[in-house]
Length: 508
Ligand SMILES: Cc1ncc(COP(=O)(O)O)c(C=O)c1O
Ligand SMILES: N[C@@H](CCOP(=O)(O)O)C(=O)O
Image (cartoon, rainbow, N blue to C red):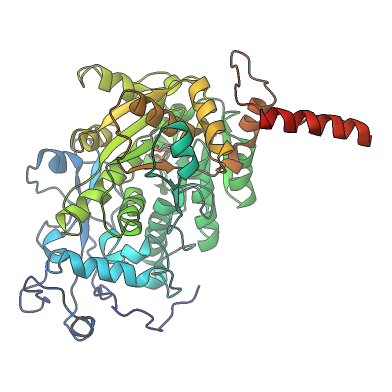
């Protein structure tokens, strides 16, 4: 993964390498936007590629600010360099990465679209990654050589024609396959950013002995793979017997230090927060707002794949609730920077067995309580005390959003329906499809409204759930779409009988 000097783009990246890095723990919140004389002014029009080539460089930048200042729109003097190791604001609240929007606004929406489009499908380091093709909006100040990437992103936006027509009477239904990725889930999008930043910090001689996370399977898989690629130790806390075999073997194979702990995800999360506050281990869960900077690029990518047309709805399964906010942030940035003129309505879909956000929504946003989450086939979202609850509520309120839930039977049936149309989705995507089915039944989503369902992990991570379903081996579930194999003796007559029977049933 050598850095390339080839210029394959018609538009080169406008951001130069930042030479001076702040070192104090709380940096002064002064604007780092370029002075008008050094900035490229677009004068309301799209600059020609050549004018950008010869224009003075712009120093884009980003910093941590308390999430409350974003949510309330109130100015704050509290901010931190992204080179600081900080996950919480002074008052203990969430942080957010705030970009220098004034600097980004020096370029109009057409410029950004052309730049991002010019990078798709290229191999030039690091812009061939779907995340790093948006580097100026993600981690603008990192050196390309510090980036740890598996060229994640650029995932298939799949036209779910047959599922749409057969099951929900829709012709404009799409599935964003974020799980068709390096480690098989959308977590790669955030982890490339977080591990790249850790790589940078270690090169700056910050005393970080490793990176740690609590996980229901996918975060740990992504963390261990990216850390292994960069030769950084990774430590993962997993709830014992609550994740799939395929997920468990990922960090083991990638050489992570794996702790299988006799608790649930929320218990592991509590432990890793305590451990990372005591030891120089960097926290890799989405409590760390860096992760969401990578995850938000999936939203930008959806717009890009629709040629910058905005879908009406985007449905996302929710657990620790970072991703719903990441999508909101990606869409909102595109609106604020003039790439699109509106954002989609967001739907967050939860398993009924792990539904604290759904219950909060149903109370009219009046009563929130973390819960003890029960076992669910959507095991990666078995979370009762989501760290990003405030981010999720903000995203939903500001996108005219909705929260739905899916029972075990509903989510497994929805997964089987999707698989029967040629997909091979995970149970979490089954949760999102259940939300779609319910919103179509209630007429909230119209037949012609363009809708994107976000598929968050690869179905191959959850084969046991599918085997149990198709074997009708799940107590209490009808498994109505089960398709078990037929056992036949080694005898042509018997094989022909079975086949004829099958073909008769198909044609009747
Ligand atoms: C496969 C899968 N889908 C959905 C989610 C939910 O994402 P979030 O925790 O950001 O809400 C997770 C992780 O929590 C996941 O691993
Ligand atoms: N599903 C997640 C749960 C942790 O979420 P995170 O986004 O906060 O890391 C996992 O796969 O571990």
